[in-house]
Every structure is written in C-alpha cells, then in structure tokens.
Amino acid sequence: MSFIRSALAAVAFIALSQGAVQTASAAKAENTVVLKLKDGDVAIQLRPDLAPKHVAQIEKLVGEGAYDGVAFHRVIPGFMAQTGDVKFGNVDKGFDASRVGTGGSDYPDIPAEFSKEPFVRGTVGMARSQNPNSANSQFFIMFADGAFLNGQYTVVGKVVSGMDVVDKIKKGSEADNGAVETPDKIIKATLQANKSKYKERPNGLQRP
Image (cartoon, rainbow, N blue to C red):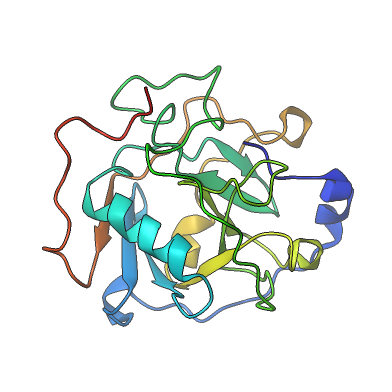
C-alpha cells in the first residue's frame, strides 16, 4: 500500500522543524494513543474533529491489540515512518516480507477525510493506495514537513511527545522505497481513554 508519488525527489529539500520534547505521560489522555517502541514511548494525539471515521477505526484496532507487534515496514530517512499493516506486518505472528504494506484489517476501508491540516514534522497520516477511499489500518509519522501531501492524505493526529523516539526508528533505503530489513515494531499500543471500551478479538483481525 505505497502512498508515495513522484514527489520523493523533493524529500531531501524538506527542512526539519524542531518540536518541544515532552514525556509521553504529559500528553492529554483523551484520544491519545501511546506506542511503546524499543527506545521509549510515543504519544499521538488523535484528531476526531478532522477525521472521525479514521480515528474511530484506529481506536478500535488499538483497543483490540491489533497493532501490537506490527512492524515499521517502510521508513524513509527525512520523510516518514509507515506502520500498521495488521495482516502481513506482525513481527510476532507471521510477518510476510513479500506482502507487508499491502494488508489491512478486516474492517471496511474508510472514505477519505481530507482536511486543510498541513503535513509537518510529527503529523500522523493514513496510508492508502491510489484510491483515495482505501485507507484502512496503516498510518505514517512524518519526520519532516511534507506540503506535497497536503489535501491528498487524511491527517489523523500528531505526535505530542516522543519525536526523539520516532527519529530512532530503523530506516530503510530510499533506493528500495524505504523497505526495512528486520524492522522495528510497535511493542504495545495503548489507548489512554476508554480503555475498557474494546476487547481483543480472539480470532484476530485478518481478512479471509
């Protein structure tokens, strides 16, 4: 589910913007997802005001444990880190290197919820195919500003603490479209609000 177009050549010219560093526990609990990574925690403030359908699906998947063990399978230096393939990208449960990036959950794809919110360092957006209405479970975190994505992908939130941890995610090669060998993973994803609303589904989240 590659979402990069011909604009990759512009990535090298995107300037990094510096954000304030907080601890993950300092972020607001409401609509906050905390990703436990090997180097620490990353707190993401979700934006249901911008993308209510996308945020609702992310919260369901987090609550069901679907993101736990899922790889950052595509990481392009100076651009973004992509994860969330709950079908083919789980490092702990049958990681498929040949198909990772093409899968999603067994929930329906989500209609686009594009907004005027810009893609800047720390923005979290939904990955999709060429079909604007094909986002499902995969998302990406921006290392740098990416104005060429504005209005083309759905913004679902922003990292409010832990960008220093994001910066340490294992990188892939631009020549290989950012594919990562032995990738880092989400150890645990936790929804800080409504923790008891969702329960892990014993049969998993795989499409047939």
